[in-house]
Length: 170
Image (cartoon, rainbow, N blue to C red; front, side, top):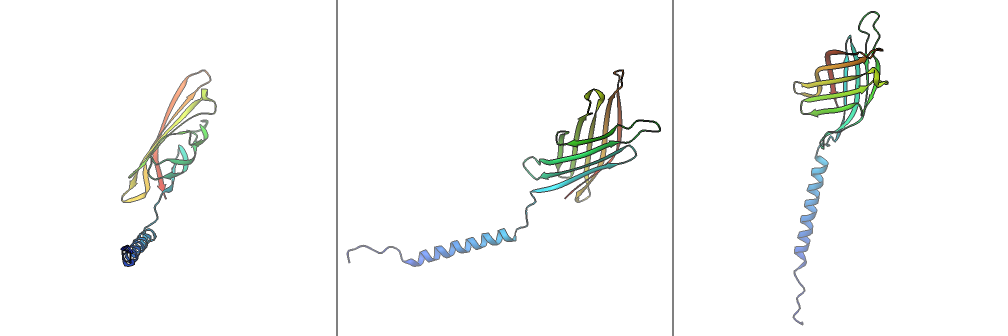
């Protein structure tokens, strides 16, 4: 022999490999056994009363600001009485959604849209809802719709409609 040792016995290396295999199996078991994270969901909101029909759908992400994706809505103001001209239907997209809040037990939407002819007026809709009891998927609340129209003579008129709104998340 020349005085060189062969180094540590191979047994500690085998033990170290066994520890890493056990650690890896434990980590895999945690990942497999963990419930799936809900990174995205859908949100539907609606209004259906004598004055207003509204339906909105969007996908949303949890966390990182809770962004809304592919927001689509349709707003229809029904005629206010015999002979009254309806405000009409408005198709709304993400550009009309000027503010939203979906956090905890609240869903809030703020939409604004000029009429196709901006000189004719605009519609502003605010929806504020809270979850019903412990069920965080169903929300109920109120809406305020402010309609601004401009007559042919340039006179601006404002009409405010209020009522109930609902939302559901899934």
